[in-house]
Image (cartoon, rainbow, N blue to C red):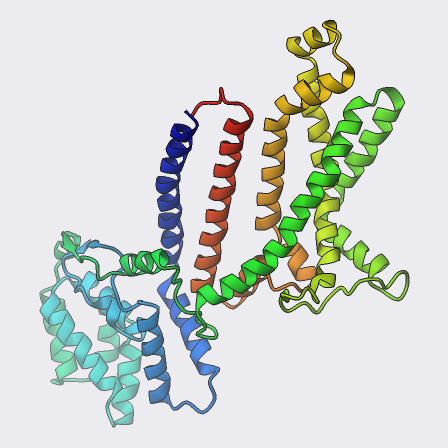
Length: 435
């Protein structure tokens, strides 16, 4: 039965993980093209001494590395008037101009001829021709185009515009077309990379995303795992002690724990720095400076304050929930029966009450780990720890989308794994739990 339960839970992980992958990719797909292109351009222009030709070459190479020259998915459904290669055109403004002209006039041959004439003007050696090309670029309204072309007669650009406007169709752009792309698309390549733990390259520094995430993940785990152990060792005894209290002492203790629970994590972190890492009080620990956790443990001193901040922020809530879980079990009939049979309070607590209250306690503890891991941003920024939260923050600030997608996927996967282990723990504690 236990093995069957575990297998069934594992089978639910696959569709859940696939749904998360699809949602994360959808986030990538809905990033505006011009926003992404601007990010690529800013990243490449940081390299000094690049000519305009080299700049374009670098951007095209980066687009290829990021697979932006591929269609998004296995198939496309778009207007039949649009070509299938718009995603390959750079810069993106040209692709948008072509798309807008085709959708506006609905005659592909004449519209493409007009667009080519505009591009030809932009590349012309004649200054006035280049000015006219730049004026026409991005304009689709017949009236606006006619206004710029009014003084000009019998030129290719005028003739192409007249032909395009004369055979304008409002029906053709409304006809949809389905096209099967196959595996040569962004989603397939991205998913294939994920299976081999290849998240692509960073836009900002062209480093492997997997390497950046691995380094950040190690640092974050060095905070959250000791934090989890600290919560277990501190909050469970406090919760048991609290469940034994009565009267005024219980109310005073609960008030103190409520006050601790109300303290924001960033405020706790700042207080720890003030009292334990400054010359004004006790300068016992370094507050900043961690780059990575060394194998010889020399950098562990940098982890004391952030781990302590996580533990203090959780003491109030977790301890009260442990006490509540124990008190809820004590009100059940089997506990009253055990006491009536003459069992000591110690036996009742450890042999019956505590064991049966482990399920809500495990839920609370796993929830703390997930929230501490996903919410490590505050601690990592305050203590300058290069973990997952800080990596995500920096990546969002620099619009490094491959890193953002990778971090989101790793955090989501860890949450799924923790939930899976939590459910399996339920079955271990109580074999009657079913899928």
